[in-house]
Length: 456
Image 1 (cartoon, one colour):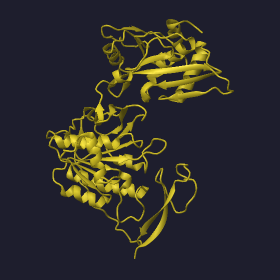
Image 2: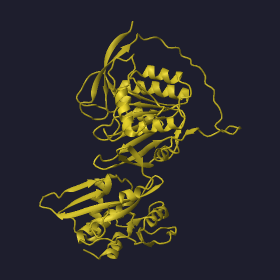
Image 3: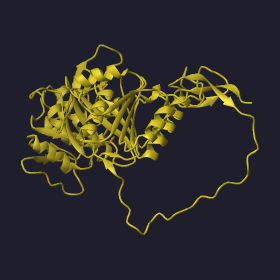
């Protein structure tokens, strides 16, 4: 007869221990062990043999057709997923509370339903009337999309199998789903893992795409076991500052397309609106002739993106000057300030430094080094940078400027928005800038500073 045992699962990494402790030995997090009851069946002697599986050739003689994709009609969403939803794929989308995940997915479901596709939205956090209120605000009340309120993953999986020609299923959210044969509460590691496995298996057998909404922790990572991100085919993050009106949909994993692609949406009273040219949005409120601002010609996936970087260097009365960074890596700022002072003589020690990427966008690529350096030098000298210039390039510890990929793509985007000059490293292969924009290619950071306004 089966009996129940107590196990303690880490809600951060999924490690299992027999006894509770304040700190998880696997990941080092504190107060993350949660008790879960599991059934223990008497041990049975297993058969030694197994069933042989059939091995097939990787290269097939007949022509294989590519995976069928479902184009949603939201171009920004399709860009991030690699051209649309692959049939039978599983997608996990996370983001801060109130950022607009449910709004985006409800619009997605209604968009597909308007195109004649069969799409369903299942929520475990809201009632059907609450979802209808959101649909009324978005102006999609007349949609033919289907809706349900449920949290039993086994029931939902059976619904998926019994619904013919289902194209898309949205689960909002996976932390509210549970499997009845587990005694643990919804949202625990075992429940999230079991519920996701049950739903993904049902979606793949019925050839329907499934999208999970995932809660995030205070650090911005998707809550629950890390194995959940390995189970799905695509992981998306919905980012943005709620004080700003635009949102970034970023892909961090995609088995059927490129990663690091972004889609840009603007939050309005009618829901999320697509932004086909985000560079105009990020530079729309830029003021010229202001010291400490530089325009960075960046690249997010395959999309060129121009964004303004703001720096303020001010005298500090503190023993340890402040280094406040928003939208960039603080460690990289520390490295860059050390190079500017040690290699180029720019006086930054004993001063507070504040750095901000305008609009709340977060930049990760090293190509932003040159733009940040230009903004810092401009703030120290109180001299504005050229108004129609863009900057990109990686800075080494030796103050050498290193080349970055797709320089011509960055310059083309800058020329399209009316910029006339590009500061960048020298390239081994000759770069052909588009008409209307000239390039300046210094060897190192000291030469770059001399080109701008001399030494300090």
